[in-house]
Length: 460
Ligand code: G3I
Image (cartoon, rainbow, N blue to C red; front, side, top):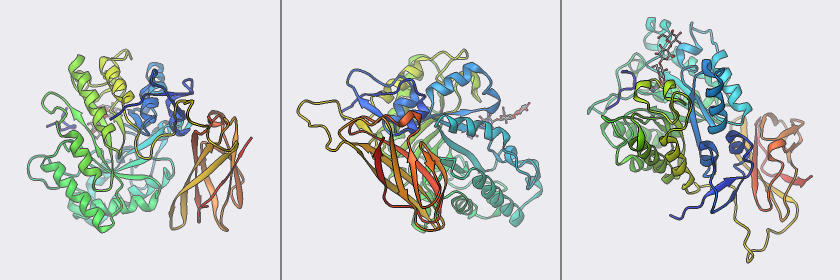
Protein backbone atom coordinates (compact mmCIF):
# COMPACT_ATOMS: atom_id res chain seq x y z
CA UNK A 1 0.00 0.00 0.00
CA UNK A 2 1.24 3.46 -0.76
CA UNK A 3 0.99 6.12 1.83
CA UNK A 4 1.66 9.24 -0.24
CA UNK A 5 2.95 11.08 2.76
CA UNK A 6 5.76 8.69 3.45
CA UNK A 7 8.36 9.51 1.15
CA UNK A 8 -16.21 -2.01 -28.77
CA UNK A 9 -15.69 -0.40 -32.00
CA UNK A 10 -13.18 2.21 -31.83
CA UNK A 11 -13.03 5.34 -33.88
CA UNK A 12 -10.06 7.59 -34.00
CA UNK A 13 -10.59 11.28 -34.09
CA UNK A 14 -8.47 14.10 -35.35
CA UNK A 15 -8.68 17.51 -33.82
CA UNK A 16 -9.48 19.94 -36.61
CA UNK A 17 -7.60 22.88 -35.25
CA UNK A 18 -4.34 21.20 -34.45
CA UNK A 19 -2.70 24.59 -34.09
CA UNK A 20 -4.81 25.41 -31.08
CA UNK A 21 -3.89 24.32 -27.59
CA UNK A 22 -5.49 21.25 -26.19
CA UNK A 23 -7.30 23.45 -23.73
CA UNK A 24 -8.89 25.56 -26.38
CA UNK A 25 -10.04 22.43 -28.07
CA UNK A 26 -11.56 21.16 -24.89
CA UNK A 27 -13.59 24.24 -24.13
CA UNK A 28 -14.36 24.95 -27.75
CA UNK A 29 -16.55 21.91 -27.51
CA UNK A 30 -13.87 19.55 -28.74
CA UNK A 31 -14.63 20.34 -32.33
CA UNK A 32 -13.48 17.20 -34.07
CA UNK A 33 -13.86 15.27 -37.26
CA UNK A 34 -13.60 11.57 -37.48
CA UNK A 35 -10.82 9.92 -39.33
CA UNK A 36 -9.85 6.32 -39.54
CA UNK A 37 -6.29 7.23 -40.43
CA UNK A 38 -5.34 9.96 -38.01
CA UNK A 39 -5.36 10.35 -34.26
CA UNK A 40 -5.04 13.27 -31.88
CA UNK A 41 -1.41 14.03 -31.16
CA UNK A 42 -1.62 15.39 -27.63
CA UNK A 43 -2.99 13.94 -24.42
CA UNK A 44 -5.47 16.76 -23.90
CA UNK A 45 -6.83 16.77 -27.45
CA UNK A 46 -7.19 13.02 -27.44
CA UNK A 47 -8.98 13.00 -24.09
CA UNK A 48 -11.23 15.85 -25.28
CA UNK A 49 -12.27 13.74 -28.25
CA UNK A 50 -14.07 11.41 -25.83
CA UNK A 51 -15.41 14.28 -23.73
CA UNK A 52 -12.73 13.94 -21.06
CA UNK A 53 -9.78 15.92 -19.79
CA UNK A 54 -6.14 14.98 -19.34
CA UNK A 55 -4.56 17.12 -16.67
CA UNK A 56 -1.48 17.52 -14.55
CA UNK A 57 -0.54 18.84 -11.14
CA UNK A 58 1.20 22.20 -11.54
CA UNK A 59 3.55 24.08 -9.24
CA UNK A 60 3.34 27.87 -9.61
CA UNK A 61 7.05 28.40 -9.16
CA UNK A 62 7.80 26.20 -12.18
CA UNK A 63 5.70 28.18 -14.63
CA UNK A 64 8.70 30.33 -15.57
CA UNK A 65 10.57 27.18 -16.70
CA UNK A 66 10.00 27.15 -20.46
CA UNK A 67 10.42 23.38 -20.90
CA UNK A 68 7.82 22.85 -18.21
CA UNK A 69 5.34 25.42 -19.47
CA UNK A 70 5.69 24.38 -23.12
CA UNK A 71 4.74 20.81 -22.25
CA UNK A 72 1.92 22.06 -20.04
CA UNK A 73 0.49 24.27 -22.78
CA UNK A 74 0.81 21.66 -25.49
CA UNK A 75 -0.25 18.45 -23.81
CA UNK A 76 -2.77 19.15 -21.07
CA UNK A 77 -6.27 20.60 -20.87
CA UNK A 78 -6.71 20.57 -17.10
CA UNK A 79 -4.56 21.56 -14.15
CA UNK A 80 -4.53 20.92 -10.41
CA UNK A 81 -2.47 23.28 -8.23
CA UNK A 82 -0.13 20.84 -6.46
CA UNK A 83 0.17 22.78 -3.18
CA UNK A 84 -1.04 26.33 -3.80
CA UNK A 85 -4.69 25.89 -2.78
CA UNK A 86 -4.03 23.94 0.40
CA UNK A 87 -5.06 25.38 3.75
CA UNK A 88 -1.52 26.40 4.77
CA UNK A 89 -1.05 28.21 1.44
CA UNK A 90 -4.37 30.05 1.29
CA UNK A 91 -4.97 30.97 4.95
CA UNK A 92 -1.55 31.28 6.58
CA UNK A 93 -3.00 33.22 9.49
CA UNK A 94 -6.57 32.85 10.59
CA UNK A 95 -8.95 34.97 8.54
CA UNK A 96 -6.20 36.27 6.22
CA UNK A 97 -6.44 34.72 2.81
CA UNK A 98 -3.77 34.76 0.14
CA UNK A 99 -4.33 33.51 -3.37
CA UNK A 100 -1.42 34.89 -5.38
CA UNK A 101 0.30 31.56 -6.11
CA UNK A 102 -2.93 29.72 -6.83
CA UNK A 103 -4.12 32.61 -9.01
CA UNK A 104 -1.00 32.32 -11.17
CA UNK A 105 -2.01 28.78 -12.03
CA UNK A 106 -5.75 29.37 -12.28
CA UNK A 107 -5.57 32.51 -14.42
CA UNK A 108 -3.06 31.04 -16.79
CA UNK A 109 -5.03 27.83 -17.16
CA UNK A 110 -8.31 29.62 -17.76
CA UNK A 111 -6.74 31.96 -20.31
CA UNK A 112 -5.82 28.83 -22.26
CA UNK A 113 -9.25 27.28 -21.88
CA UNK A 114 -8.07 24.59 -19.48
CA UNK A 115 -10.18 23.18 -16.67
CA UNK A 116 -9.04 23.63 -13.08
CA UNK A 117 -9.35 20.99 -10.35
CA UNK A 118 -9.30 22.61 -6.94
CA UNK A 119 -7.16 20.76 -4.36
CA UNK A 120 -7.91 20.57 -1.43
CA UNK A 121 -10.33 22.41 0.86
CA UNK A 122 -10.27 20.25 4.00
CA UNK A 123 -7.42 17.88 4.81
CA UNK A 124 -5.64 16.77 7.96
CA UNK A 125 -2.26 17.62 6.36
CA UNK A 126 -0.81 20.93 5.13
CA UNK A 127 -2.79 22.85 7.72
CA UNK A 128 -1.47 26.23 8.84
CA UNK A 129 0.17 26.28 12.27
CA UNK A 130 -2.66 28.21 13.90
CA UNK A 131 -5.11 25.31 13.56
CA UNK A 132 -3.11 23.35 16.15
CA UNK A 133 -4.41 25.78 18.79
CA UNK A 134 -8.02 24.98 17.91
CA UNK A 135 -10.34 22.08 18.54
CA UNK A 136 -14.04 21.31 18.78
CA UNK A 137 -16.46 23.97 17.60
CA UNK A 138 -13.73 26.56 17.06
CA UNK A 139 -11.85 24.25 14.69
CA UNK A 140 -15.06 23.14 12.95
CA UNK A 141 -16.04 26.76 12.35
CA UNK A 142 -12.55 27.65 11.17
CA UNK A 143 -12.66 24.77 8.70
CA UNK A 144 -16.12 25.74 7.42
CA UNK A 145 -15.07 29.36 7.08
CA UNK A 146 -12.02 28.24 5.13
CA UNK A 147 -14.11 26.10 2.77
CA UNK A 148 -16.59 28.94 2.28
CA UNK A 149 -14.01 31.64 1.68
CA UNK A 150 -11.83 29.71 -0.74
CA UNK A 151 -14.69 28.16 -2.72
CA UNK A 152 -16.40 31.56 -2.92
CA UNK A 153 -13.23 33.27 -4.11
CA UNK A 154 -12.86 30.73 -6.92
CA UNK A 155 -16.59 30.45 -7.61
CA UNK A 156 -17.25 29.81 -11.30
CA UNK A 157 -13.62 28.99 -12.06
CA UNK A 158 -13.30 25.45 -10.74
CA UNK A 159 -14.48 22.39 -12.61
CA UNK A 160 -14.14 20.03 -9.63
CA UNK A 161 -13.12 20.59 -6.01
CA UNK A 162 -11.45 18.04 -3.78
CA UNK A 163 -13.61 19.15 -0.88
CA UNK A 164 -12.28 16.57 1.56
CA UNK A 165 -9.01 14.72 1.10
CA UNK A 166 -7.82 11.46 2.68
CA UNK A 167 -10.26 11.20 5.57
CA UNK A 168 -10.28 7.40 5.79
CA UNK A 169 -7.82 5.18 7.65
CA UNK A 170 -5.48 2.70 6.02
CA UNK A 171 -5.50 -0.93 7.01
CA UNK A 172 -8.37 -3.29 7.42
CA UNK A 173 -10.49 -1.36 9.87
CA UNK A 174 -12.51 0.46 7.26
CA UNK A 175 -13.03 3.50 9.45
CA UNK A 176 -12.23 7.15 9.52
CA UNK A 177 -8.69 8.42 10.01
CA UNK A 178 -8.09 10.01 13.37
CA UNK A 179 -7.34 13.71 12.89
CA UNK A 180 -8.10 17.06 14.48
CA UNK A 181 -10.93 17.47 11.94
CA UNK A 182 -12.37 14.03 12.68
CA UNK A 183 -12.36 14.86 16.39
CA UNK A 184 -14.75 17.77 15.70
CA UNK A 185 -17.43 15.15 15.01
CA UNK A 186 -18.15 12.48 12.41
CA UNK A 187 -20.32 14.86 10.40
CA UNK A 188 -17.39 17.13 9.51
CA UNK A 189 -17.18 15.73 5.98
CA UNK A 190 -20.80 16.37 5.11
CA UNK A 191 -20.60 19.81 6.72
CA UNK A 192 -17.65 20.63 4.43
CA UNK A 193 -19.54 19.44 1.35
CA UNK A 194 -22.62 21.50 2.23
CA UNK A 195 -20.51 24.61 2.74
CA UNK A 196 -18.75 24.05 -0.59
CA UNK A 197 -22.04 23.62 -2.46
CA UNK A 198 -23.38 26.86 -1.04
CA UNK A 199 -20.18 28.70 -1.94
CA UNK A 200 -19.86 27.37 -5.52
CA UNK A 201 -22.99 25.61 -6.74
CA UNK A 202 -21.57 24.97 -10.21
CA UNK A 203 -18.40 23.13 -9.20
CA UNK A 204 -18.40 19.35 -8.95
CA UNK A 205 -17.68 18.37 -5.38
CA UNK A 206 -15.36 15.39 -4.93
CA UNK A 207 -14.12 13.20 -2.11
CA UNK A 208 -10.47 12.29 -2.88
CA UNK A 209 -8.28 9.52 -1.41
CA UNK A 210 -5.42 7.04 -2.00
CA UNK A 211 -5.34 3.26 -1.67
CA UNK A 212 -8.98 3.24 -2.68
CA UNK A 213 -8.19 2.34 -6.29
CA UNK A 214 -9.26 -1.29 -5.99
CA UNK A 215 -11.94 -2.82 -3.85
CA UNK A 216 -10.65 -3.13 -0.28
CA UNK A 217 -11.70 -2.23 3.26
CA UNK A 218 -10.80 1.42 2.76
CA UNK A 219 -12.59 1.85 -0.57
CA UNK A 220 -15.57 -0.05 0.87
CA UNK A 221 -15.74 2.51 3.66
CA UNK A 222 -15.65 5.40 1.18
CA UNK A 223 -18.26 3.62 -0.90
CA UNK A 224 -20.54 3.35 2.13
CA UNK A 225 -20.10 7.07 2.83
CA UNK A 226 -20.99 8.02 -0.75
CA UNK A 227 -24.00 5.73 -0.66
CA UNK A 228 -25.10 7.33 2.61
CA UNK A 229 -24.56 10.87 1.26
CA UNK A 230 -26.58 10.12 -1.86
CA UNK A 231 -29.41 8.62 0.18
CA UNK A 232 -29.57 11.64 2.51
CA UNK A 233 -29.08 14.33 -0.12
CA UNK A 234 -25.64 15.43 1.07
CA UNK A 235 -24.15 17.18 -1.99
CA UNK A 236 -21.42 15.01 -3.51
CA UNK A 237 -20.77 14.80 -7.25
CA UNK A 238 -17.57 12.84 -7.68
CA UNK A 239 -14.96 10.61 -6.14
CA UNK A 240 -11.26 11.09 -6.87
CA UNK A 241 -8.95 8.08 -7.00
CA UNK A 242 -5.41 9.31 -6.47
CA UNK A 243 -3.79 6.28 -8.12
CA UNK A 244 -0.21 6.42 -6.84
CA UNK A 245 1.19 3.08 -7.98
CA UNK A 246 4.48 1.22 -7.66
CA UNK A 247 5.76 -2.36 -7.46
CA UNK A 248 4.46 -2.80 -3.90
CA UNK A 249 1.13 -1.26 -4.76
CA UNK A 250 0.50 -1.92 -8.46
CA UNK A 251 -2.51 -0.90 -10.45
CA UNK A 252 -5.17 -3.27 -9.10
CA UNK A 253 -6.74 -5.79 -11.44
CA UNK A 254 -10.19 -4.59 -10.39
CA UNK A 255 -9.39 -0.91 -10.97
CA UNK A 256 -12.02 -0.45 -13.69
CA UNK A 257 -14.60 -2.45 -11.76
CA UNK A 258 -13.98 -0.33 -8.68
CA UNK A 259 -14.39 2.93 -10.65
CA UNK A 260 -17.56 1.52 -12.15
CA UNK A 261 -19.12 0.51 -8.82
CA UNK A 262 -18.69 4.06 -7.55
CA UNK A 263 -20.09 5.47 -10.80
CA UNK A 264 -23.09 3.19 -10.31
CA UNK A 265 -23.85 5.09 -7.10
CA UNK A 266 -24.60 8.14 -9.25
CA UNK A 267 -21.35 10.08 -8.91
CA UNK A 268 -18.65 10.90 -11.43
CA UNK A 269 -15.23 9.35 -10.94
CA UNK A 270 -11.88 10.95 -11.68
CA UNK A 271 -8.28 9.70 -11.64
CA UNK A 272 -6.76 12.57 -9.73
CA UNK A 273 -3.04 12.05 -8.97
CA UNK A 274 -1.83 9.30 -11.28
CA UNK A 275 1.82 8.31 -11.13
CA UNK A 276 3.35 4.87 -11.62
CA UNK A 277 6.89 4.18 -10.48
CA UNK A 278 9.06 2.20 -12.88
CA UNK A 279 10.36 2.43 -16.41
CA UNK A 280 10.16 0.99 -19.90
CA UNK A 281 7.41 -1.28 -21.12
CA UNK A 282 6.23 -2.31 -17.64
CA UNK A 283 5.48 1.28 -16.73
CA UNK A 284 4.10 1.98 -20.22
CA UNK A 285 1.69 -0.96 -20.02
CA UNK A 286 0.42 0.16 -16.61
CA UNK A 287 -0.25 3.68 -17.89
CA UNK A 288 -2.18 2.25 -20.84
CA UNK A 289 -4.23 0.08 -18.45
CA UNK A 290 -5.05 3.07 -16.27
CA UNK A 291 -6.18 5.08 -19.30
CA UNK A 292 -8.27 2.22 -20.65
CA UNK A 293 -9.99 1.79 -17.28
CA UNK A 294 -11.11 5.42 -17.29
CA UNK A 295 -12.23 5.28 -20.90
CA UNK A 296 -14.30 2.19 -20.18
CA UNK A 297 -16.28 3.96 -17.46
CA UNK A 298 -18.74 6.45 -18.91
CA UNK A 299 -18.70 8.59 -15.77
CA UNK A 300 -14.90 8.78 -15.61
CA UNK A 301 -14.43 12.48 -16.42
CA UNK A 302 -10.68 12.49 -16.87
CA UNK A 303 -7.20 11.74 -15.67
CA UNK A 304 -4.71 13.96 -13.88
CA UNK A 305 -1.06 12.93 -13.60
CA UNK A 306 0.77 14.19 -10.51
CA UNK A 307 3.41 16.27 -12.28
CA UNK A 308 4.92 16.67 -15.73
CA UNK A 309 8.57 15.47 -15.73
CA UNK A 310 9.97 12.77 -13.47
CA UNK A 311 11.99 15.47 -11.76
CA UNK A 312 8.77 17.34 -10.91
CA UNK A 313 7.39 14.39 -8.96
CA UNK A 314 7.01 14.22 -5.17
CA UNK A 315 8.82 10.90 -5.54
CA UNK A 316 11.22 11.73 -8.37
CA UNK A 317 13.55 8.79 -7.71
CA UNK A 318 10.78 6.43 -8.80
CA UNK A 319 10.60 8.10 -12.26
CA UNK A 320 6.82 7.81 -12.18
CA UNK A 321 5.69 10.32 -14.82
CA UNK A 322 5.24 10.62 -18.60
CA UNK A 323 8.20 12.89 -19.41
CA UNK A 324 11.83 12.39 -18.40
CA UNK A 325 13.89 14.95 -16.51
CA UNK A 326 14.72 16.75 -19.76
CA UNK A 327 11.11 16.91 -20.88
CA UNK A 328 11.35 14.09 -23.45
CA UNK A 329 8.34 11.85 -23.96
CA UNK A 330 8.79 8.43 -22.36
CA UNK A 331 7.41 5.09 -23.51
CA UNK A 332 4.73 5.64 -20.88
CA UNK A 333 3.63 8.80 -22.74
CA UNK A 334 3.40 6.97 -26.05
CA UNK A 335 1.32 4.16 -24.64
CA UNK A 336 -0.96 6.50 -22.67
CA UNK A 337 -1.63 8.51 -25.83
CA UNK A 338 -2.23 5.37 -27.89
CA UNK A 339 -4.69 4.13 -25.28
CA UNK A 340 -6.48 7.49 -25.35
CA UNK A 341 -6.70 7.45 -29.12
CA UNK A 342 -8.48 4.13 -29.06
CA UNK A 343 -11.06 5.37 -26.62
CA UNK A 344 -14.74 5.44 -27.26
CA UNK A 345 -16.86 8.54 -26.88
CA UNK A 346 -18.48 9.08 -23.50
CA UNK A 347 -22.07 9.85 -22.81
CA UNK A 348 -22.98 12.54 -23.80
CA UNK A 349 -21.06 11.84 -26.98
CA UNK A 350 -18.45 14.30 -28.19
CA UNK A 351 -19.31 16.69 -30.96
CA UNK A 352 -17.86 14.63 -33.76
CA UNK A 353 -18.78 14.96 -37.38
CA UNK A 354 -19.15 11.66 -39.17
CA UNK A 355 -16.95 11.24 -42.23
CA UNK A 356 -18.67 12.43 -45.41
CA UNK A 357 -20.64 9.52 -46.84
CA UNK A 358 -22.00 9.65 -50.33
CA UNK A 359 -25.15 7.87 -49.23
CA UNK A 360 -25.91 10.29 -46.36
CA UNK A 361 -27.45 13.64 -47.25
CA UNK A 362 -26.01 16.72 -45.52
CA UNK A 363 -27.92 18.16 -42.55
CA UNK A 364 -30.84 20.31 -43.65
CA UNK A 365 -31.04 24.08 -43.15
CA UNK A 366 -28.24 26.52 -43.85
CA UNK A 367 -28.13 28.47 -40.59
CA UNK A 368 -27.59 27.21 -37.08
CA UNK A 369 -29.51 26.18 -34.01
CA UNK A 370 -28.72 26.73 -30.33
CA UNK A 371 -29.89 24.68 -27.38
CA UNK A 372 -29.53 25.53 -23.70
CA UNK A 373 -28.89 23.24 -20.79
CA UNK A 374 -29.32 24.90 -17.44
CA UNK A 375 -27.91 24.17 -14.01
CA UNK A 376 -30.22 26.29 -11.85
CA UNK A 377 -30.00 26.81 -8.11
CA UNK A 378 -31.71 29.22 -5.76
CA UNK A 379 -30.44 32.63 -6.87
CA UNK A 380 -28.14 31.65 -9.72
CA UNK A 381 -27.41 29.43 -12.69
CA UNK A 382 -24.87 28.16 -15.17
CA UNK A 383 -26.08 27.88 -18.77
CA UNK A 384 -24.30 25.73 -21.34
CA UNK A 385 -25.30 26.60 -24.91
CA UNK A 386 -24.63 24.26 -27.80
CA UNK A 387 -24.45 25.89 -31.24
CA UNK A 388 -24.97 23.44 -34.11
CA UNK A 389 -24.33 24.30 -37.76
CA UNK A 390 -26.97 23.44 -40.36
CA UNK A 391 -26.15 22.28 -43.89
CA UNK A 392 -23.33 24.79 -44.41
CA UNK A 393 -20.14 25.38 -42.50
CA UNK A 394 -20.38 28.36 -40.14
CA UNK A 395 -17.59 30.90 -40.23
CA UNK A 396 -19.10 32.93 -37.40
CA UNK A 397 -22.21 32.75 -35.25
CA UNK A 398 -24.13 34.55 -32.57
CA UNK A 399 -26.68 33.23 -30.12
CA UNK A 400 -29.41 35.35 -28.57
CA UNK A 401 -30.85 34.56 -25.16
CA UNK A 402 -33.49 36.53 -23.32
CA UNK A 403 -33.00 36.51 -19.57
CA UNK A 404 -36.04 36.71 -17.29
CA UNK A 405 -36.51 39.94 -15.38
CA UNK A 406 -33.98 40.33 -12.56
CA UNK A 407 -31.47 37.90 -14.07
CA UNK A 408 -27.97 39.02 -15.09
CA UNK A 409 -24.92 37.45 -16.72
CA UNK A 410 -21.85 37.60 -14.49
CA UNK A 411 -19.26 35.50 -16.32
CA UNK A 412 -18.97 34.11 -19.87
CA UNK A 413 -16.63 31.55 -21.44
CA UNK A 414 -16.01 30.59 -25.08
CA UNK A 415 -18.11 33.54 -26.35
CA UNK A 416 -18.21 37.33 -26.27
CA UNK A 417 -21.34 38.69 -24.56
CA UNK A 418 -22.92 42.04 -25.41
CA UNK A 419 -24.97 43.25 -22.47
CA UNK A 420 -25.71 41.41 -19.26
CA UNK A 421 -29.50 41.50 -18.87
CA UNK A 422 -32.62 41.37 -21.03
CA UNK A 423 -31.72 39.98 -24.44
CA UNK A 424 -28.01 39.20 -24.49
CA UNK A 425 -26.14 38.29 -27.68
CA UNK A 426 -23.19 35.93 -27.48
CA UNK A 427 -20.83 35.97 -30.47
CA UNK A 428 -18.16 33.40 -31.23
CA UNK A 429 -14.57 34.06 -30.21
CA UNK A 430 -11.59 33.59 -32.53
CA UNK A 431 -11.12 29.89 -31.98
CA UNK A 432 -14.69 28.60 -32.24
CA UNK A 433 -16.28 30.62 -35.07
CA UNK A 434 -15.73 27.89 -37.64
CA UNK A 435 -18.11 24.99 -37.19
CA UNK A 436 -18.43 22.33 -39.87
CA UNK A 437 -21.83 21.50 -41.33
CA UNK A 438 -23.74 19.46 -38.76
CA UNK A 439 -21.06 19.86 -36.09
CA UNK A 440 -21.39 21.71 -32.78
CA UNK A 441 -19.48 23.89 -30.39
CA UNK A 442 -20.35 25.03 -26.88
CA UNK A 443 -20.10 28.18 -24.82
CA UNK A 444 -21.35 28.97 -21.35
CA UNK A 445 -22.17 31.68 -18.91
CA UNK A 446 -22.96 32.06 -15.26
CA UNK A 447 -25.57 34.41 -13.89
CA UNK A 448 -27.66 35.56 -10.99
CA UNK A 449 -31.41 35.02 -10.85
CA UNK A 450 -33.24 32.61 -13.14
CA UNK A 451 -31.52 31.39 -16.31
CA UNK A 452 -33.03 31.33 -19.81
CA UNK A 453 -34.38 28.11 -21.29
CA UNK A 454 -34.17 28.83 -25.01
CA UNK A 455 -31.76 30.44 -27.47
CA UNK A 456 -31.80 31.59 -31.08
CA UNK A 457 -28.85 31.25 -33.42
CA UNK A 458 -27.67 33.37 -36.34
CA UNK A 459 -24.91 32.57 -38.81
CA UNK A 460 -22.73 35.62 -39.47
O1 G3I B 1 7.79 25.57 -0.40
C1 G3I B 1 8.66 25.04 0.60
C2 G3I B 1 10.03 25.61 0.46
O2 G3I B 1 9.97 26.99 0.69
C3 G3I B 1 10.94 24.90 1.43
O3 G3I B 1 12.24 25.34 1.23
C4 G3I B 1 10.90 23.41 1.26
C5 G3I B 1 11.73 22.66 2.26
O4 G3I B 1 11.18 21.39 2.56
O5 G3I B 1 9.56 22.98 1.39
C6 G3I B 1 8.71 23.53 0.44
O6 G3I B 1 7.42 23.05 0.61
C7 G3I B 1 7.21 21.70 0.28
C8 G3I B 1 6.16 21.63 -0.82
O7 G3I B 1 5.83 20.28 -1.08
C9 G3I B 1 6.60 22.29 -2.10
O8 G3I B 1 7.66 21.61 -2.66
C10 G3I B 1 6.74 20.99 1.52
O9 G3I B 1 7.80 20.93 2.46
C11 G3I B 1 6.31 19.59 1.17
O10 G3I B 1 5.69 19.00 2.30
C12 G3I B 1 5.29 19.61 0.05
O11 G3I B 1 4.97 18.31 -0.31
C13 G3I B 1 3.75 18.14 -1.01
C14 G3I B 1 2.90 17.13 -0.27
O12 G3I B 1 1.71 16.90 -0.99
C15 G3I B 1 2.50 17.65 1.11
O13 G3I B 1 1.84 16.69 1.80
C16 G3I B 1 4.07 17.65 -2.40
O14 G3I B 1 4.70 18.69 -3.15
C17 G3I B 1 2.76 17.28 -3.11
O15 G3I B 1 3.04 16.64 -4.34
C18 G3I B 1 1.98 16.31 -2.24
O16 G3I B 1 0.76 16.03 -2.90
C19 G3I B 1 -0.08 15.09 -2.24
C20 G3I B 1 -1.50 15.54 -2.47
O17 G3I B 1 -1.70 16.86 -2.06
C21 G3I B 1 -2.49 14.61 -1.77
N1 G3I B 1 -2.27 13.23 -2.15
C22 G3I B 1 -0.89 12.77 -2.01
C23 G3I B 1 0.06 13.66 -2.77
C24 G3I B 1 1.48 13.12 -2.74
O18 G3I B 1 1.98 13.12 -1.43
